[in-house]
Length: 441
Ligand code: GDP
Ligand code: MG
Image 1: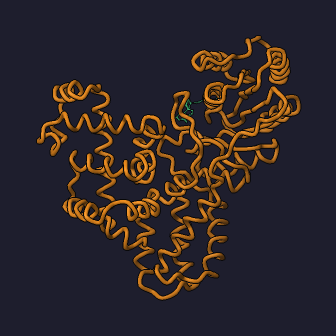
Image 2: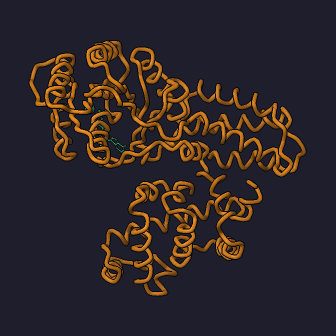
Image 3: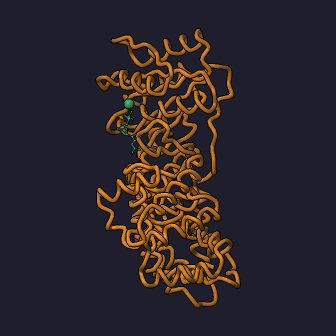
């Protein structure tokens, strides 16, 4: 993994006096391999490494850090800068209806994302929204959007069979104007691969609809092909931004860097699941951590150092050194997390906690979730807390009843515990929390 590789770089560079060109080049070779493993497209990885190498060689080594730390910090910082900006808003302050057009390959998530955006705009942002599907290729594609429209409680353009995309776009515009909609979302057809017919169709629709936003929807699991997709679309349609879908899965995040590098456009949102509210702002810091394969270890350590009392850290470190992490430890962690600004933030930084993070990402559930988890752990017997594996179906029902939760909630807690245990084992391998702190400053 990338973190192993970087660990190797740390070891080789630790304790040397200055950041020489040889140091940087050695480290960068590993970084390049790591980027490729994270699915960054080859030309993008190459360019990134070249840019960073140049910057790094010129830099003074801070007195308080080792050359290895310095290199990793530079890589991390550059990655975040490349992936930024932090939150890119939709630019739809035009005379209504503001048209938002979604383009991308088949299966990238355009239709789902159209409905997610519609829900977000009509909900929190109180806009009057209409959606229209221009997908006449896939059978029932227009019906799919209509169904999502009902779920999202957003109007969709009535379906008229036999119309071409450009005609549908025209009709949608007219209808949106007549009915006084603020925003018109256009969901378009995709292809399995980039082809000219698709590009021509997108261009023709864009000419008619004059979108305020043309968003390229890309599956974050897209690997080396990401460059081709981004190049074709950005050369032929005036993109304004990118949306990465399936960031809830185990994508390594490399597609994000490829997209940014090739299109130069901001990544405006990340799709975090199939449900219509699973759309989040894009977080460059988190994704950088994901690409580097170690979670946002740097800021986790910074935050931890600032917040956790030394005693706590030492007690936890000695538990971890023994490889122990039971429900009591989880509870202690939850309490620390609260002090460190919410679990959403922390979970995102821990390697292996992506799913837990997705579940906790929305700030509103944070506090309630914490209290529920605490209640569940309270409802366990001391033995169960030490050996969560004991929790069979019958015991789970008891814990759920005792804590006013459901068995599903209990399962989620157990899953989170398991994921944290795995994460803790990783940290242990890296020399424990104290080792991590020493290593990363
Ligand atoms: P389209 O062909 O580009 O319109 O793609 P769809 O919107 O029909 O999505 C294809 C599949 O991907 C559907 O099963 C969606 O539920 C799923 N999907 C879309 N976005 C996400 C996401 O962010 N996360 C996950 N897990 N699934 C997604
Ligand atoms: Mg579709």
